[in-house]
Length: 137
Image (tube, rainbow, N blue to C red):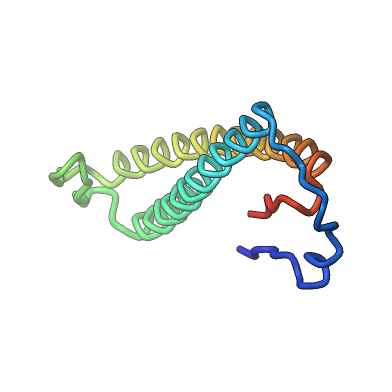
């Protein structure tokens, strides 16, 4: 994550007498941007976790294909493990993987919506305040 700060030259280029008043709607936009940014960070973290979980499931499925079909395999259900036949465990892993795919798609859609709204707020706020505001995340 890269933060953008004004350089000394950029600070000096801003006229000292130019004092832009922050209106109520401006403050509401700033607050909305902040709220969206927090959601974006949380959802991106959740998305990375889901992608990692899917990769782990795919790796486990690959390993289980090497196991004899009649052999019982421990499968975690809640806080305990249940011994199930290998084909049934593979079906459960496939189902879990599909569920994760659905969740990943939903998270990506949420992120796109949030990023789009943040872009619109950035345009409005930078248009009003110029270099006087820093919305770089």
